[in-house]
Image (cartoon, rainbow, N blue to C red; front, side, top):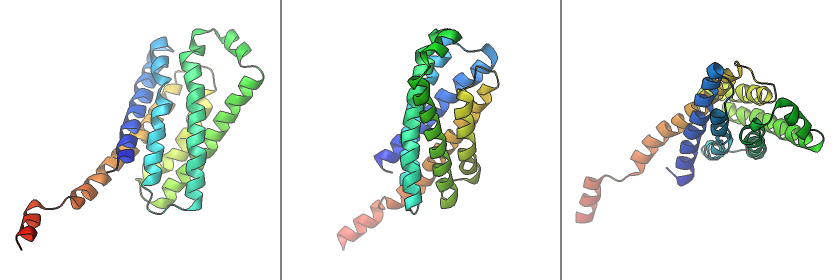
Length: 202
């Protein structure tokens, strides 16, 4: 198992926890400074998972390359926007937020969201076409991520927690699948000590 794969697995698991737990909590307790602060960092930890998923595709074609490129840029832009919203703007009232997001800031956010959605659909299609990963999270990826992105632009609602939980489940499932599939390969790559000793004696 390479470092980038291990890094991606860890990032996917962390991103899933940082998304799922605060998202579910906010469904019951409402928007809170503490949960928003945790959510602000979740997007950045998903970036290594994207790289690991891409590198472990069995055959990477040009479509997969484009999907990964758009997805990694879109996730970075969306993660940065989410960081600003959950770590900074959350301390302002709704009117102040709307005032700050007029003009070019709103355009930048919309470009980030659009890039994230397009990248999710393209990269999710690559996951489906490859047949490398489980069908449920692969088919859910290009659906759940755009829904999550759109819900992030809407005013607070307790139902937004379901989008957080669904995305967290997809990320964790894919990360755990990478772990399970790497173990047999790692075990096969390790030499048998007894066989190695017999070879040296001959």
